[in-house]
Image 1 (cartoon, rainbow, N blue to C red):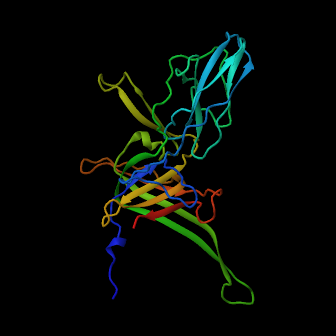
Image 2 (cartoon, one colour; image 1 turned 30 degrees about the vertical axis):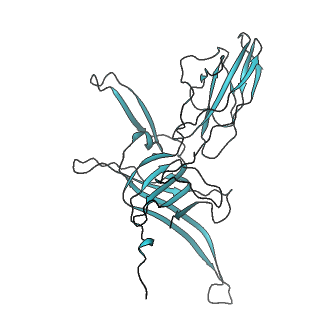
Image 3 (cartoon, rainbow, N blue to C red; image 1 turned 135 degrees about the horizontal axis):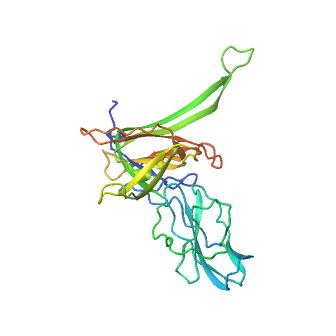
Length: 310
């Protein structure tokens, strides 16, 4: 006699995570007993390779250098330290770390004493671009190396209502003149996406949602005293579309401690940003992440994965 298997009914609420690690082919996104991703999306780069180039009029010195990767969410912890004795009238040069999936740039930290490195580039450097210390020397007063990895995974908020995972293959048939029915069918296109309403409106994480926006914080003295700090998103202009791996992790209602995980390996946010404001209910943000393929992975595992713990 047929019956309903309640262990195969999934009803739990979900949580959205940004910048999750992309598992190796055949593996799954690793989570802990609470459903939190455990692997870093970006690890620190290796100790940087150093050299020197002629230029400037600085005295001879030994330079100590660390590097980090950055992405649209934040920055990794620093690499191991490298050092190099540089002769007078020469400048230290720091080789770029290797290009890795998920990294959008890198930062360089330099000092003339071990363990005292501070940031030396005003904006993240492009991967593939080496850094040469300016002839004016080290820039003082900038940030120290980060103590924690903020490049992901990042909790982006609880999901309100249903989460929709769409898998839409486009299959076209092939016909032969002598046969009335198609003789073959081929997959010619596909689209995978995750749609959800996020209950938490964290402006710092909107940078992963808004393709034409820039997030910033600051202090505006024209605002009322005591309320002059702000965070903002400004819009407009040609900007690189943020791409990152996303996952919705939802608890199994009939199986406490077990989860269902929906992951897109590389995706962009395609939903128009709409934030309703009302006193009756909290503001939510509707997001739709559309997947991009990673051709370097094997066929059948280039876009994403859904798995559950039965």
